Length: 222
Image 1 (cartoon, one colour):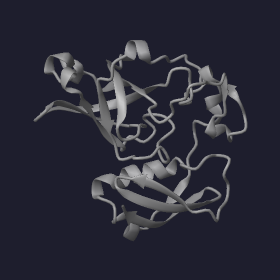
Image 2 (cartoon, one colour):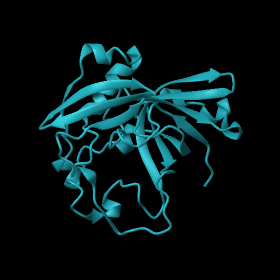
Image 3 (cartoon, helix red, strand yellow):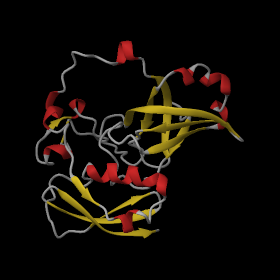
């Protein structure tokens, strides 16, 4: 496979990333193509689609060996499921799949750039393919959701004071609130005194969680 480009996002580490694409529609990114693929004709017709599939590499999860079972974080990290029934990054082939909204395509100095939202990828993630989301084929009304029916409504209340929220750039505030509402912590950690820090848009957001309330205590520019 050939890497065709990479995506720029506000996450320099994986902590805080949504578990799936589309869960936080205010989290944005830019797909920057490599010079060989930075051609307008390669994207002809793509702007007619509202959503696209991005195929990418779990570049921070490369391993020489793989395990047939993994422990999904949303199941508490203690219950094992088959790797092929999950979207775990630890797979025989480290390929990720994300459905994102295509907000626009802009022709910039170095060629066309894809602006997308609803991302779940780290900054710099290698992209190996782009495909249109085709509703008639990709949306199945009779689909079942397996064990994810137990975790799909996962959310938490967020207290983020106006003073601290105002430290973030205005266009990053909604994304931060959505990201935190997904509770970035590993499901097996339940320590209300532990302070977590998530790196987002060049800021370190410090928070604790007590029960179903996440409280932001500090926002530090990195």
